[in-house]
Length: 486
Image (tube, rainbow, N blue to C red):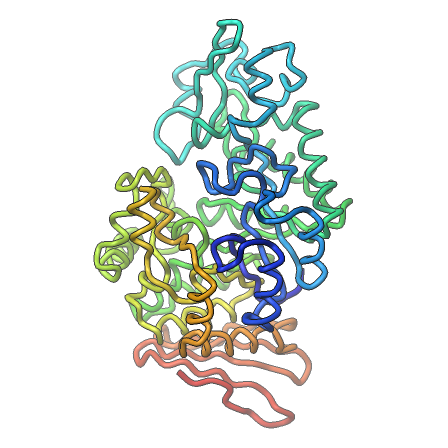
């Protein structure tokens, strides 16, 4: 994957009708801004219960968007990342319907994870209470088979998302087939969605246990055989992220979004600096995604301190809600059928109180810290919360999943803030220094200075948090030149 900014987007929510339109957008209105694109689920169907993360057919491109040839055509111009949903598939899939019809006689019997496969002797109360789940309740759903018998099936996320037995022959074949399709389509990186929940074992939390790492390692090796890199998506305590990063190609720096808010809200970069001194470097950096702004990634856990003191973190969350004038409260926690209780649902722009200078500074910090930056499509335009979509669906995350028309895109790309952000993005994509050495310069905590150097090329970011001033300088021959001042 090129060390350039990636776009993360749904095909049909960024003013595009299909994958071909997306390619045209990237080569026209968004030219030079992205070296890669993470296409959020484009499988059949894109409009399921969980916006494509509950595929009925993971091996089929939704015909409304195109087909595998269109994905291959797109991959010829930019790096393409796709999700490999390793934990589950839709209850409406042909495979699960066949299982309900035929039970143990189904060709897909081994594909699905049932309660008795993990607990053949039954589970104790302790076993059940030990299962980690960020959503309320137990991860099982009772299904009635055609013969009248009943089965408890693992459903880690929702009752429509049926967990796969990744250790079974059926599960292995299922994932292998998807990897082969991805290779043929020119996909260069996969994101393992919900990989932390893929392995269930009696007497454990069933989340990021040693066997999970073994599974990720084996799947990563298979992906490498297909010429595909692997990004693992895990929201967890920061020390867990550091350990995971040692064993995979890439992880997300999910701590960064809240640390940047902390830095800007409190005019103090101390917590961010401490993280940058210890954070893994093989990361994809984000400020916003199709999910909410994660809190668990910086919080304390089990009596261990987090990256931000809990009292300060509480104030940051309250500040986000205040900056959005309470709109984020309507989408967060149990307020909007939202089961991701460890996230705040809000656009990053509104979390910053629609402060354009603060927003550009936040993006500059993201682009200068180690890692490959991803910019979410709503964040690309620095946009407001979509309260109309939230009211329509009552799904909390939809507050940050706007459906743009082509006309809206054209209007947004003519906006002065977008033009400044685009200039900053082109800078990040074209300067050789970002492939060199990272240095966090020693400064008072109200000042943040980051420098990248490669040979005689260098670039430097300086942020004065008290004055809310951004300065980017770079080497031009033997001279120092100001590139951008905000």
